[in-house]
Image (cartoon, rainbow, N blue to C red; front, side, top):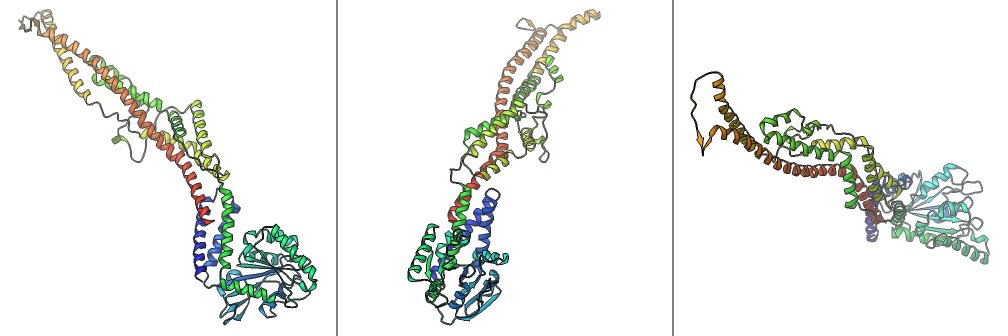
Length: 536
């Protein structure tokens, strides 16, 4: 009993892993394989949840094989109808040994014809024996009942006769597909009383050879005559041993799980799961950046910094002309500070759409990523990876544009010195104005014939008004030229910073919209393989 519970716990864990693998593989592996595995998990989970330690054994066979006679012989009853009219078994019936009927179990099996044999200290306690309809019956409903119960019972005893033990309907339709359940199947050659000793040995040897050739070496072969009783005691003893061991249920489901996990593993493949190396992702990011017009924005940052710097630090006599020209970034609807960015409505840019050449480069880079990501992966996963990577091209274009629009280009930082230069320029400009007015004042007074003696103020022998005019003019021009050098240096720094910030924003979009979904599918494949391996 302890051994059975331990194995029961083990099969429960394996079923959990198989269920996990099913969830991961759904929509990517074959629907037929996934659905079959899912049905097994449901079936096994329900069976294992049913209270009691009953072992369900089914007697199955073809018309005229003596299956019902064997059922009566083993049970010591005449419950199963026998005779020459075929088929004699129209629906499954059960005999249970114990103190009460395993109602929940029989309801799950869908067996309504039930009989109970008080077990007491019987060697068949907790055994449920089923008599199935003929698997070769002309009635479709009979064959469907057999097919259904063959999937549910813990152990199968196939009753064959000397004439039809090699029947293809049995071997191809049932025995071969159940090769993984060889340990929980027995093939009984009935009606051996009709054979001579030599014929019996030959028939048993040929039956053994057939089973071995089909991979059923672990399936036991027995000889019996339900009519004379020969071999009945041995079959009953075998059933008693199985019922006592209480391992058939776990063995059956263990084989089922192994088989379904193996089928699922074939769907998942065994080639190494590819990894997206940095190089191929970087090339994709570069193509994304080109398609999103990042070079245009970087050039706009360079020109905008020059434009704004010239206005702020240039000679006032000419710098005002710059204000008549549009700001290069504002034309693109870019360069907004974080305070100006709406948290809920990211502004759209006025950047040019990607050219056909840029689109072709982007498509080529994306194909390169997909070629790496799908190398050696199963077809279903490959299709899914391509689907999630391609996604919605229009949505991707919007996300790229939004990433550019929402990137803080830091155009409101790094120009504090402009204020000082602006003040100095106005000081020089005022000096120029004062000097020029002072120099022009005598001529104006003379022209107006206004007699007035103006004081003469000099410094180092130079008239102050001349120094003011010349100094204001020269100072403003020199300061503007020097400032232009620093503005240009700042513009280049800002352009580099903008390129990095924009590249990071584009890379984030690429990671979320393309690389992330691809990697998630690859990780899903790895997880599915691991879960399947644990289930096996």
